[in-house]
Length: 83
Image: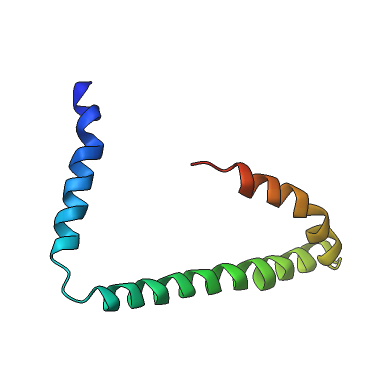
């Protein structure tokens, strides 16, 4: 059980070793930006196009009221998600 105590140190060492091998940090951040933008775009399309479309097709109702009623629950879930 004691080996779990050293996990953060080992992971930090692995990450640091990889960071020291980077020659062009700007290119890495540019690629991370593209990745972040792609993921965010996919989530927005899924949340604001696909899910409301499926809701509308299944229930035969407009999804705007349903989404509007969920805003407090979504905000609470987002604000309390610590893991």
